[in-house]
Length: 477
Image (cartoon, rainbow, N blue to C red; front, side, top):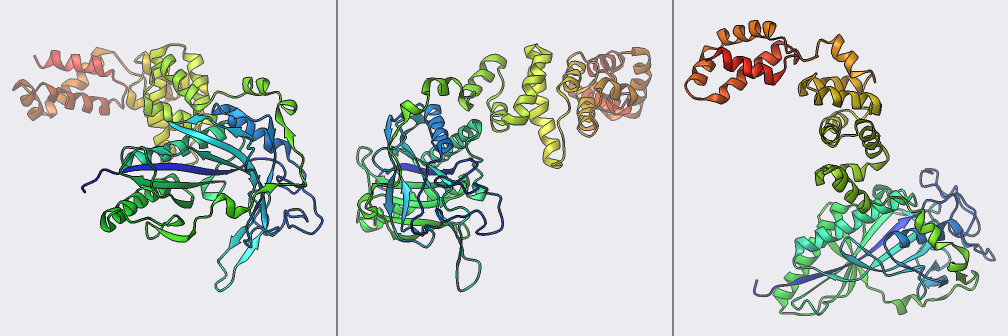
C-alpha cells in the first residue's frame, strides 16, 4: 500500500433512559413487557389532537450524564420536530432536539463530545412473520438520550476500532453508575452508530459513511475495521474516486457492512421547533451545583482510588469497575475489616481469580459475608492454612457461608508445623521416590518441590509448605 491512511471516527450513541413513564405521555416505560401494544395511548400512537407533555425525570437524567462527562448544561433548550416517514413513527416526525441540546461539549476516554440531547424512541418493527411485518408500539415514545462525539482521527485501523469501543464501554459504565439506564445492548437499550471516513491527510476528512445500530462492542470494532478496509480498498483500486456518502448496516452473519440508503443531511429532516411543548430554562428548574455534588463516584475516580489506596493490578481494578454493585462493594467491606494493605491485596486476588472462577463454573455461586471472607484471608496471611486449602474452603463458603476457621478445623485443613509428625511423612515420601531424590542430589534443586507437593497431598494441605521444604532439605543432606 503506497499511501498511509488516517481513519476518522465519530460516534452517535442512543440509550433508553430508565424512567417510570414515557417521554411525552403517562404510559409505562417497561422494556420487559412482552405483550405487544400494551403500554400505549393516543399520544404515542399519534392520534389526532393528542398533546405531548414533558417528562422532567428524563431531562434530569440527561443533565446528570452531562455533568458526569464535564459538559456544559444549557440554560435555554427546546424540542424540535424531525420530519421523516417510516412506519415506526406514526406522526410522520420524531420529537427530538436540534439547535439547542441540553448538553454541549464534554470529554470521555480520549474523545470530545459535541452534544447530548433528548428525544423519543421509535416503535419496534417485527419482521418475523414471513411476507409481512408488524409494529409493536410499546417502545414508541420511550425517553432516548443521544450522545454525539466530535470526529476523532486515529493513527491506524486497530487504534480507531479500539478507541471507539473503549468510549462506548466507558459511557455504558457511566450510565449504569448514574442509574439512568440499564444499557443492555442485547435488548436494544443502548445502540451505537459509527461515522467513518479515511484520508491520506490527517488534517482533512474523507467522505463519511454511517454504520447503523451496532448492538455489541465486538460488532462496533468489527464494523469499523471492515469499513475502513473497504474504503481504503476503494481508494487504492479507483485511484481516489469518491466514496458514496451513505448509511450502511452491519451483517453479523456475513461479518460485513451493506448499503442501506443515501445518507440524509439535516436539511432533509426539515427541523422546526415543536409548537406543543414549552421552551425550557434549565438553570431555573434544576440546582446544577447540588446535582453535581450528588453524583456518585464514577468509574475513572474509582480506578484512581483503587490504584492509589491499595495498588491493585489494572486488570483486577477493571473487574471491580464492571461489577461495582456486588463485587466492588463486597471487596470494600472486606478491606475495611482487614485494614492492612498486604492482606487487602491477597483478598483482591482471591476475589478476581478464585471466586470469579467459581462463578464462571456455576452461575449460582454466591459471595460469602465480608466478615467470613476476611477471616479466611487472615488465616492465609498468618499461614494457618495453605493456599490450596483456602481455595477449597472458599468453594465451601459460597455454598454454606460458615466460619472458615470452623471449616478448616472440621476438615483438618489447618496447617501443621509439628515437625515430629511431618518428619515421619517426609521420610515416607523420600523412600517412595528414589529417582526424585537422586535428581535432587544430582543438582536439580527444584526436584524437592515435587516431594513438597506429595507431602501436601498426603496431609490434605495441612502441612506448612515452608516448614515442609526446609524439613526435606535437612533430611536429604
